[in-house]
Amino acid sequence: MIWKTIRAATLAAATACVFTVAPPAAAQESLDDLPILTEYHFAPGRYMDVVKQMAQMDQIRAEAQLPPLQYFWHVQGDAWNLMVLSQPAKEGDRDKFIAARKKLGIEPQRGAMMAMIASHIDTIVMTETAAERLAAMEADD
Image (tube, rainbow, N blue to C red; front, side):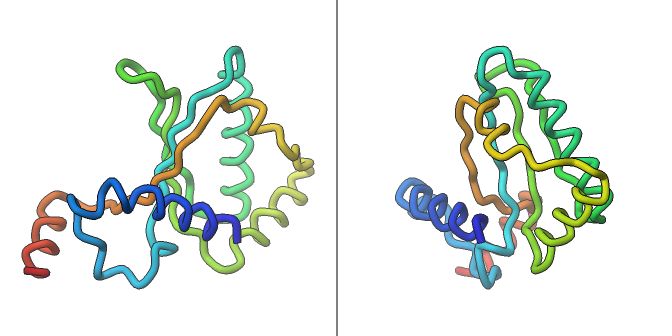
Protein backbone atom coordinates (compact mmCIF):
# COMPACT_ATOMS: atom_id res chain seq x y z
CA MET A 1 0.00 0.00 0.00
CA ILE A 2 1.36 3.44 -0.92
CA TRP A 3 0.66 4.85 2.55
CA LYS A 4 2.88 2.20 4.13
CA THR A 5 5.70 3.26 1.80
CA ILE A 6 5.15 6.95 2.61
CA ARG A 7 5.00 6.21 6.32
CA ALA A 8 8.19 4.12 6.19
CA ALA A 9 10.08 6.79 4.25
CA THR A 10 8.84 9.53 6.55
CA LEU A 11 9.82 7.56 9.63
CA ALA A 12 13.32 6.91 8.33
CA ALA A 13 13.90 10.60 7.62
CA ALA A 14 12.32 11.85 10.83
CA THR A 15 13.93 9.33 13.16
CA ALA A 16 17.40 10.80 12.81
CA CYS A 17 16.10 14.28 13.65
CA VAL A 18 13.56 13.53 16.33
CA PHE A 19 14.49 10.28 18.06
CA THR A 20 16.64 11.87 20.76
CA VAL A 21 14.08 14.61 21.46
CA ALA A 22 10.79 12.71 21.54
CA PRO A 23 10.37 9.14 22.71
CA PRO A 24 8.67 6.73 20.29
CA ALA A 25 4.95 6.14 20.63
CA ALA A 26 5.10 2.94 22.65
CA ALA A 27 1.32 2.63 22.86
CA GLN A 28 1.00 2.45 19.09
CA GLU A 29 1.31 -0.99 17.54
CA SER A 30 2.17 0.44 14.14
CA LEU A 31 2.87 3.75 12.44
CA ASP A 32 -0.04 2.83 10.16
CA ASP A 33 -2.30 3.63 13.14
CA LEU A 34 -1.23 7.29 13.16
CA PRO A 35 -2.51 10.22 11.07
CA ILE A 36 -0.40 12.00 8.46
CA LEU A 37 0.06 15.77 8.33
CA THR A 38 0.90 16.87 4.79
CA GLU A 39 2.31 20.32 4.03
CA TYR A 40 1.71 21.48 0.46
CA HIS A 41 3.45 24.17 -1.56
CA PHE A 42 1.38 24.83 -4.69
CA ALA A 43 2.87 25.30 -8.13
CA PRO A 44 2.66 28.96 -9.26
CA GLY A 45 -0.79 29.85 -10.60
CA ARG A 46 -2.37 26.55 -9.51
CA TYR A 47 -4.06 27.57 -6.22
CA MET A 48 -7.63 27.43 -7.57
CA ASP A 49 -6.91 24.12 -9.34
CA VAL A 50 -5.75 22.54 -6.07
CA VAL A 51 -8.79 23.82 -4.18
CA LYS A 52 -11.09 22.34 -6.86
CA GLN A 53 -9.22 19.02 -6.73
CA MET A 54 -9.49 18.90 -2.92
CA ALA A 55 -13.21 19.74 -3.08
CA GLN A 56 -13.71 16.88 -5.51
CA MET A 57 -11.82 14.51 -3.19
CA ASP A 58 -14.05 15.67 -0.31
CA GLN A 59 -17.12 14.86 -2.40
CA ILE A 60 -15.79 11.36 -3.17
CA ARG A 61 -14.79 10.72 0.47
CA ALA A 62 -18.26 11.79 1.67
CA GLU A 63 -19.94 9.45 -0.85
CA ALA A 64 -17.63 6.62 0.28
CA GLN A 65 -18.42 7.41 3.94
CA LEU A 66 -14.72 7.89 4.68
CA PRO A 67 -13.54 10.30 7.38
CA PRO A 68 -13.14 13.84 6.06
CA LEU A 69 -9.72 15.37 5.63
CA GLN A 70 -8.98 18.30 7.92
CA TYR A 71 -7.62 21.34 6.09
CA PHE A 72 -5.47 24.18 7.43
CA TRP A 73 -5.33 26.96 4.80
CA HIS A 74 -2.41 29.37 4.98
CA VAL A 75 -3.30 32.90 6.05
CA GLN A 76 -0.06 34.43 7.30
CA GLY A 77 3.40 33.21 8.27
CA ASP A 78 5.59 30.56 6.66
CA ALA A 79 5.61 29.80 2.94
CA TRP A 80 3.30 26.76 2.86
CA ASN A 81 -0.12 27.00 1.18
CA LEU A 82 -2.06 24.17 2.81
CA MET A 83 -1.71 21.53 5.51
CA VAL A 84 -3.94 18.48 5.47
CA LEU A 85 -4.47 16.09 8.37
CA SER A 86 -5.56 12.68 7.15
CA GLN A 87 -6.58 9.81 9.38
CA PRO A 88 -5.01 6.36 8.89
CA ALA A 89 -6.44 4.37 6.02
CA LYS A 90 -8.24 1.17 6.91
CA GLU A 91 -8.51 -2.04 4.95
CA GLY A 92 -11.04 -1.50 2.15
CA ASP A 93 -10.91 2.32 2.16
CA ARG A 94 -9.28 2.44 -1.28
CA ASP A 95 -11.98 0.19 -2.74
CA LYS A 96 -14.71 2.38 -1.18
CA PHE A 97 -13.05 5.50 -2.61
CA ILE A 98 -12.82 4.01 -6.12
CA ALA A 99 -16.43 2.78 -6.01
CA ALA A 100 -17.65 6.21 -4.87
CA ARG A 101 -15.62 7.96 -7.57
CA LYS A 102 -17.15 5.70 -10.22
CA LYS A 103 -20.66 6.18 -8.81
CA LEU A 104 -20.23 9.95 -9.02
CA GLY A 105 -18.90 9.65 -12.58
CA ILE A 106 -15.57 11.27 -11.71
CA GLU A 107 -12.73 10.07 -13.90
CA PRO A 108 -9.29 9.62 -12.33
CA GLN A 109 -6.83 12.32 -13.29
CA ARG A 110 -3.55 10.47 -12.98
CA GLY A 111 -0.69 12.85 -12.25
CA ALA A 112 -2.94 15.92 -12.16
CA MET A 113 -2.32 16.67 -8.50
CA MET A 114 1.44 16.31 -8.87
CA ALA A 115 1.36 18.93 -11.65
CA MET A 116 -0.36 21.34 -9.27
CA ILE A 117 2.05 20.85 -6.36
CA ALA A 118 5.55 22.35 -6.29
CA SER A 119 6.45 20.25 -3.23
CA HIS A 120 4.96 18.50 -0.27
CA ILE A 121 6.10 16.95 3.00
CA ASP A 122 4.36 14.05 4.76
CA THR A 123 4.85 13.76 8.51
CA ILE A 124 3.43 11.06 10.76
CA VAL A 125 1.96 12.75 13.83
CA MET A 126 0.23 12.03 17.09
CA THR A 127 -2.92 13.98 17.87
CA GLU A 128 -3.12 14.28 21.62
CA THR A 129 -3.25 17.08 24.14
CA ALA A 130 -0.10 18.19 25.94
CA ALA A 131 -1.53 16.70 29.16
CA GLU A 132 -2.05 13.33 27.44
CA ARG A 133 1.47 13.45 26.02
CA LEU A 134 2.96 14.34 29.40
CA ALA A 135 1.08 11.50 31.12
CA ALA A 136 2.34 9.02 28.50
CA MET A 137 5.91 10.25 28.90
CA GLU A 138 5.76 10.07 32.70
CA ALA A 139 4.30 6.55 32.50
CA ASP A 140 7.32 5.49 30.42
CA ASP A 141 9.75 6.67 33.16
